[in-house]
Length: 122
Image (cartoon, one colour):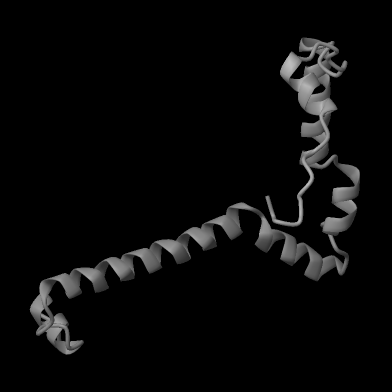
């Protein structure tokens, strides 16, 4: 029979532990309980258990495979690339045209051949 919290702690061998470890065990139990209850709530409210029951009764799969579903919807990367192309065309129509104006330094550097190394390594 448990009359107080101290009796419960003594029954589980936690009475001699420091307070910090007791709090750690308590909060660990709370986190575990919340995690399990959250997963169960998501399974129930997400319709997973209902789908399992329907599939058991009918014998047919009610959810299409991931492969079929992905074929029917555009991928995120493709949508983002299309949006980027559209925004660039609308906001910067001349962006893809090559620039003909170059600086004198760029012209000089592009027309000068690279230096040749001599046998002394200079």
